[in-house]
Image (spheres, rainbow over the protein chains, first blue to last red):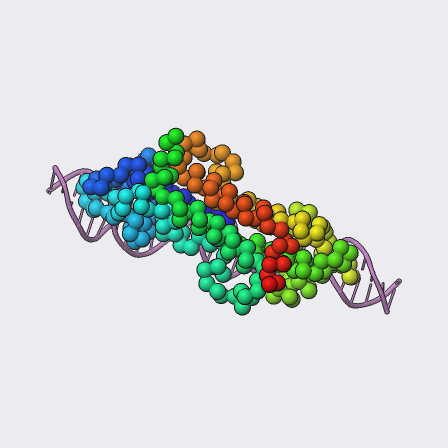
Length: 136
Length: 136
DNA sequence: CTAATTCCTAGTAAAGCAATAGGAATTATA
DNA sequence: TATAATTCCTATTGCTTTACTAGGAATTAG
């Protein structure tokens, strides 16, 4: 049940954007990559997910870069991770009822509980909180 | 963050063993495979994990099969899943402090919270509970 | 015009997953 | 003792995903 680097690196990029947030000042990828020690080429692909999910917007050309589309306190970690990884549920059967056993499945009960507990965490934590708490 | 079939099928096998639990009566793999509609060959490999993790014991030869090593009410789901999948944490860095950033990492904070929430669920649910609740 | 930047597509090496196959070892029982 | 039922062990394989790298096109500020 490990998260991919996609989710981990992508979230780090978002944290970096939050830490350098200013509504009219885009951050170029090269800076993020250097500060976070991540491959610029790979990060670029991750930014595509975040852009298509409307969590960041991009400005092309010189002096361009990326900006958060909303303030860090109104972006949840859940939004970010789902944008990068798709569903975060432990099994497919908690998202869609695919299985004929679904009605009376002991294990599905458990998968739902795990799913809920993860959701509770990620949907109730904002990007800002994450940045603030690590400052202490 | 999907669980592998290893964890899902393996847990189903354990549930099956719990539902047919009798301390001196082993359940042959062929029965589990048929009831759960799982490949017997693959299940066999999963049972190896569970046996080496001392959650089941096996009896070879005719009339042989597998038995839970303890009563279903004293086996937690956490034990079972870890036995099948290894660590269930979302990142390596919550198990071992591998990363030089660890001391001041906003994202690690989050991974720990997710990890705790999963642990709370799986370490406080027993095999018996799971079986009982689905009977209703 | 130039340099800095994002955007897009394609390719690729490595790893892990989900099996399948085949046979050896063990044991109850007829 | 022979047989059938069973677990145990090892190897192989096809498939998918991951985590990149490479190269160039498009855009824009100065």
